[in-house]
Image 1 (cartoon, rainbow, N blue to C red):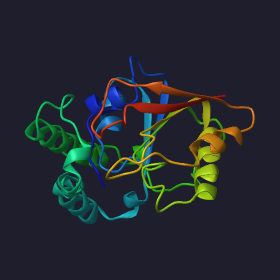
Image 2: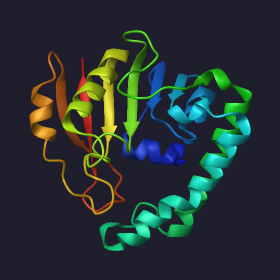
Image 3: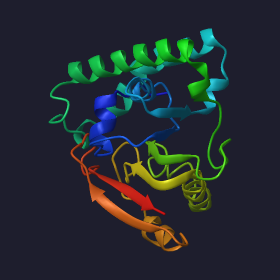
Length: 213
């Protein structure tokens, strides 16, 4: 359950400004929703972990902070540090994001909705912008092509304008996702674009998928 900062979201999704409503799916312990809401945005996060009781959620977030470093250490040659500057800076961002998340989920629990792909508990076109990081494509070795197609269609369903997904490579060594090109061909009535972003941590993971209704 990774805690990512608002600054990381800005870079991963090439965000210059936010629309009136945003969904973060599946958000984990990210600080994005709290920061977006503080800026006046109708921001909602969804994640299956939000079913946990308060103490359980706090424990899960705290224990996840060092866990992500294990993947990085195991595949050290597959990661670069020019965006973060140093491992210490990355850790600092993640700790701050976790603190922001835990404060906000306690103060505004309605912003944090239990749920998971490929079925989300929201009406059609509920959000202007839908963001999803480090789930689709990242875990293509766990979730198959059929799951990805259903998940993409669900993200499109709850968006009335745009969906942005990052990254487009598998976790760990960052191999390409073989079924991505053919998958995009199956999306009816949706424009797709693969766009460079000003963020790279995994080597070669510097692109996001943009789907527009």
